[in-house]
Image (tube, one colour):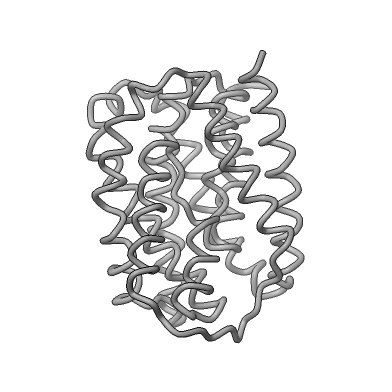
Amino acid sequence: MSALLLALIAGAVIGLALGALGGGGSVLAVPALIYLLGFTPVAATTASLVIVAITSATAMSAHARDGHVRWRTGLLFAAAGTGPAMLGGALAGHIPAAALTAAFAVVAGAAALRMLRTRPHPDTIVPVRPGRAAAAGAGLGAVTGVLGVGGGFLAVPALVSVLGMRMRNAVGTSLLVITVNSMAALMTRAGTVEELDWAVVGPFAGAAVLGAWDGKRLASKVSAHALQRIFALVLLAVAAFMLIDAAL
């Protein structure tokens, strides 16, 4: 199968997850770029940030039109993570490839297990604690910078449990947070962006954008719980594979 076709298929799947769940697609982008398209871990994390930033911004516009993006809250949450995202992006190039792969696998596996244990509650409301919100935003930014993921698979639970946001609004606002964090991390990787294989990254990003529109429509027809469980199981399998690969 050609690299172009693989990039289109992977991009569509990742965009679908981002559009439907407000995150999660990026955590599949890195292993897809490494194992399907032959990118190095460092190049894969940089390419993932490019793809995720473009796709999230596009998907966010659709959610914003429906009034499901909490702009002020999302920007405050993202602001706490901007510095850590830039620092993490600068450090990523100095981390050994095997360690970067293992760290990614551990974070992905932990996120998958959390998603399997947690059922989305559309009407969840809890008091906002600014300190916890800032800590969650900073942690999310650090993960974004080092591992090249938008962090939506962590942002949605944080926006619901820490900031008391309804699930539908958390999905839309998560895309805003992902876009800001991804752009901040990319600012520290300007040199590596120029070295990417744009003949692969471009079609990948284009397919992801189209998939995100379909994902938003899918989210309105299928329960969030069902989508979350399917994605978590796939993510758990990917994490296990990457961890084994890093250990060999």
